[in-house]
Figure 1 (cartoon, rainbow, N blue to C red):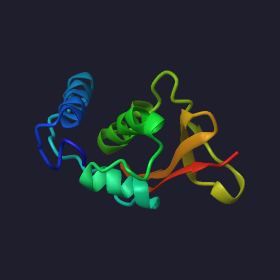
Figure 2: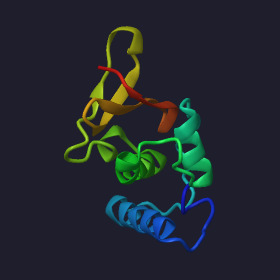
Figure 3: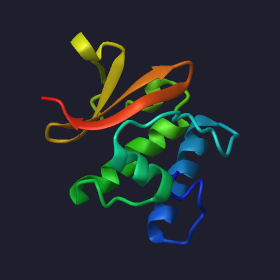
Figure 4: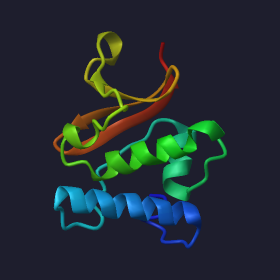
Length: 127
């Protein structure tokens, strides 16, 4: 994950590390590599998560996406993901079983949450 899996010295990775450490302090968790995200569907999102390369994502969404992925990576419950403004909600219809978090406008990150793990993370405009 950006800044955690590859401890580079860029300012982006330092930001991710600070978010991670703040999350640990809030949650009283003593783990350093929780690795809750198990699969990512969107190619650009996967590239960002694995290689810290945001080139296939909208530039205005990068910071928000980084924050959301960090929360997904270290969430011990859905409450850890539901921060103010995130608008976490379950989806219905053909997306039943998924949850969505608002990125910006109609853009959402959707995912499945099962047994403290996150699966099938996707980045889309589903409205």
